Length: 365
Image (cartoon, rainbow, N blue to C red; front, side, top):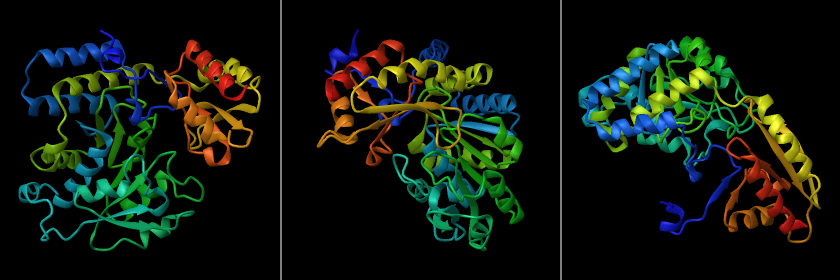
């Protein structure tokens, strides 16, 4: 059955990347098969959550892990866990004023909106946001000077959304946290190297299941056992509203196994696929294109397209025209104010690249 026709939906070419607004990732058949097994069978859910987490933790050389509903829920549940520190009273009364230690320090330039602001999930977990540093700079000492007896954690956001320049590193953040006997929560939702943060000693590491890992709607939280056990308790508290189904737990576990075995598409492969695409882009009037690496340093390469401003035909005009067609073509719009559109081709095949070229020729040719 074609569900595009059934529900009168537009087809989509995703040249934007692993974006939630587009359904994030396409799933491998083995992941779909694991979900199907989950759909067709019953489990003791508490054991399913625990045993899949232990299995993935072993593969990651982490002390423990838990599959959750999303990276966002991972943030909220991690904060709640650190406020309550294993208290069952807290699980049932997460916002009770007797739990006065609630401050979570985050570099100001990392309190970003990734679809919702980081601070929203911190607040949902019962935390109080304390920003460190400035919009264009945050050094280790800026974080450390915000620590007091109300601080429960430092949160670091490793993302292309966040400020990159003049920013302390993850390693710096770990050192500041541990020097002050605090855990570091790392929001690494769209990152690709899962092992390096375990090796750094990060206490709570949060990945999106559906982004680089190409799993179903889910998240993975892994790190130190004590904290993961506290997070697991949240299924009886705020985590109830964020629960994940059996099918997505099994699908996510399979996706992580696939990822650790095969990894993502490497940079050389992306550049090889991008080269003929960029050549065709440069033949379109009023366009200048080149291959660029991801701004946050990930091994991801994209087509960087500068649109010559022709009266009303600027980058935003082109973006709107690309979206309005069927198929709707989605791009990365973060630099449209500079006249630049980026095309992420990780989920784009050669035929779809030709559709993009034809559409751009229609708009600008």
